[in-house]
Length: 596
Image 1: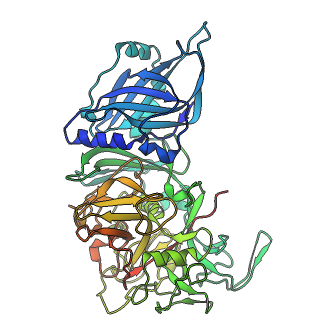
Image 2 (image 1 turned 120 degrees about the vertical axis):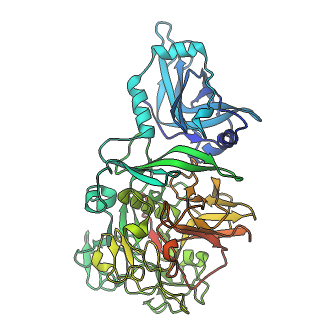
Image 3 (image 1 turned 45 degrees about the vertical axis):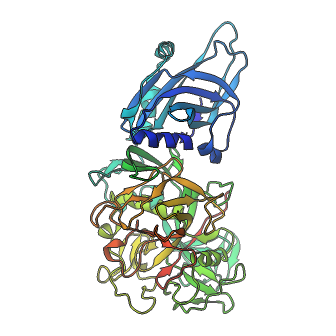
């Protein structure tokens, strides 16, 4: 039986959605075409036509599933088929008022069906049902072929239809956790297995939560011990030898304190959109997020769990930094514990970004600690080591939102270190204050707003000091903030390959986040498109940008010791140029193991 990946809407399809949202036209699907070609996943958004088309199918039905989703159906018959083929790629076509018929979306097979030729004695048929997103399902023009309707009535597969619709708009199966964010009404509602659960122990039964835990990892990527096991230390070097799988790791072996995050699968289901006013792309008005600890129909492995290579490969877990970074001085063979501004940023041979307890986070007080320099010293630790990026950050954001049924990290866990005066230097708190909380969530002992917080083993996910974020570049042109992401080859001031357009423009005003963008290629990230919110409504956190000064911009997250209620786990700034460094900017290291 065939199985298919999620449908990808093409760039022309997205442009048509924008035209529909503006009221200049209505959606009219025209044909379904079947191909035995296998275009690369990366090429799907820019495809304008399928190659090696084997059959063209009339639209037999178009059913509205919800305000942003329709199910388009058609039937393939082998009545006139002389040569069989594999159904590897399905293209859905629509009528564009300016371009004529366009390739609207593409769906690739994971396991292809064989369409056999007509043998003269019996015929066979295959029903195709495509669930696809539109800007407004009310703007669909229903125009189908009568003959095709008669055909589909003969092959109606109720079970498949029910499973497909359930798989797109809602899940009730055990171990599928979800939330719905109603942007207009400013509410977040638990869905699926998350209903009735409380954050914390209730979620520990799920692998991505319960097995998210602190550990120590060598520079070569060997996990030596979990928190509580013999030999575990947060000093940055083994204080007692560890023998693992017959290999002895002596006292003094360099180890970083990391959080092992198991992989999970996700599905983002937009229910309603609106056109971003005066700019390109769509803002979500209602959306559902689901996660699962196992692969399921219609779900995708979260992008955090791929190697950061051009031929990205899946991995079973990644390692987040338990603490904000300090530097390891390779020449002195010791950690820089008090943010002395002496870091060697030389590639390969220079110092190394680290994650240990009892160290003041590194800053750019006087040294040239730009995002690019932070990337260098993260890479210096060895193969697989890098800066934390938009993928790893969005994984933690999604886990928090579903666990707490909220985007308000400060209200649910603690304000973080956000209420201190500006001061004259790096006023961030040293790492390790939340050690006693272990793999849990909470805040250190002391006054809320002045002490560190922790989310499932990761200290100061927000507050204390800004953290540079890799994988996301922004170009401001004086009017728009256009975002670009890449899965590999991270570099500043690049908006061409391997970076690609996310399909919508970010907000061009500062303020509390009130809406986020969505596209097929960027359905996992919480990138702001509107800033009309408040500090007590979803998403609750602030967004900074600098569209008026223009040029290339870099991303940072979390906020620092002076940001008050603006800070939080969804706080983001894209107002800095690649050359800038500041006393309140730090970075975190990430380790992505090689694929098996």
